[in-house]
Every structure is written in C-alpha cells, then in structure tokens.
Image (cartoon, rainbow, N blue to C red; front, side, top):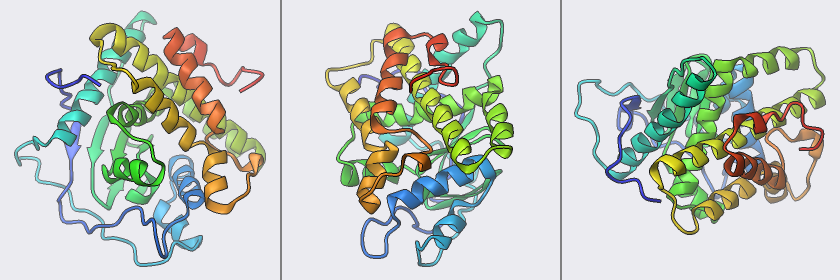
Length: 292
C-alpha cells in the first residue's frame, strides 16, 4: 500500500501514553474468548454497555485496566509510522466520502479518530482494547488501540497495511450510517425485535459497513492509485478471518447462525467486494437484499 507523503487528517486524537495501564487482548491463559469479544463489541455499539463489564460477566477474569487519562492537547503530535499511517488513512476516508455526500446534496462531517492504549472513556461507556476498533455513535468517534493490528497478525494470521486500512474504513462506514440515519433506524427496530431478529439487523448493518469500506477503497484507488499487489487479497483475508462463523468455530468449536451479529466470512468478503468492484453506495443496500 502506497501512502507515505499523502495528506494526513487533523481529526486524530492521540491519547496513547496518557497514564493508562496496559490492558488489551489476552491470547493465552485466562484470555478473553473471541466470541466474548464480538458480543462485547456489539453491546458497546448498540446498547451503550461497557464492553469490559460484558467480558467480566462472561468469564474474562482479571482486573480491568485503568482508564486512560486524556493526553495533553498541547503536546507535540506523534510522528511514529503507525500514527502517520492512521492519519493518512483517515484523510483518505474524508477525501472519499466528502464528494459522495456532495453528489447527493449533503455535507460530510468527518469523525474524530482516537488512538488509545488499554482503556479509555467514551460517550458509549469505557472503551476497552479487548473489543478491537469500534465506533461510538454517541460522540461520533472511532476508537483504536493499535495493539489490535498486532493481534490480527498473531492470532488471525492476517495483516498488512491495507488490511489495517480496511478495518479503519469499516468503522468510518458506521459513521456514515450514523450521518444518514441508518444506524438510528436499526437501533429503533432492534428495540422492538426478538433477539434473533435484532441479531439479523446487526448483521445487515455490519455488512453494509463492509460494503462502504469497499466503496472507499474503490474511490481512493481512483484518486490516489495507492493499492499494490496483494492488498485486496489481504483485506479479503481479514474479512474472512473475522466472520462470525470463523470466530465461533475458533472460540467454541461450533457455529450458531442465529447468534451472528457481523455476518459470516463469506458474507463479509462478498459485500466488501461488491463495494470495491462497483464503487457505488447504491449497491450497499443490505437491508433490501434477499440474499446476504
């Protein structure tokens, strides 16, 4: 992925090293099961529940890491490769979504992305590194502990910079859903639905965010020609690795489709590819699709 030297977004808050303590994804011993992590993430996104609470209730064990204190806003901007990469990818999302909204007569309001370590306060409750990257609709921020990207390589055997960019673009896709009112409609529908029906709505919401990430990749490639050989394959491998069926099979050995909240591996791959190949948000209406 060719990104160095491109514009960097100013909408990144770097709260790393602000006094928190080293929580995060434990992958051995009394570690947190991947199925638990997926459930905790959904709880934090849709119900405002502290994901650390969910993990504790489901047997994560161990004390919760300290909540990180905000970094001094006057401190010099970090210049490490990881933070420059995140700022550049966020700028790519801004440059892709701004003209898309303008073409529909709207104005794109970019989200803020916060980098943190371990645990941080959000308008959706305490954000925990164990959930992986997530979007909080209440404060319209994307939260990322960069240790998740290392976990992707260690636990899921997927990685690469474009795979990381896909993860960020997926979370920004949730911001787009918030701006256009889709996520609020889903939340209202879920409040009146059974658990199975609520899960099915969540799957459609997540697959649409995957499709939006594909649209972003298409538009950015047209403008920046940033893709290199193997980049799309790495994103597809990541989408496959974090499908609900793959996570359930790895964490408990069985697959329960009614409990899916993000979609199967095949579905996540299919909808990312659909967005990337067409580059058209009109192709991302998962809510009217007969077959996901």
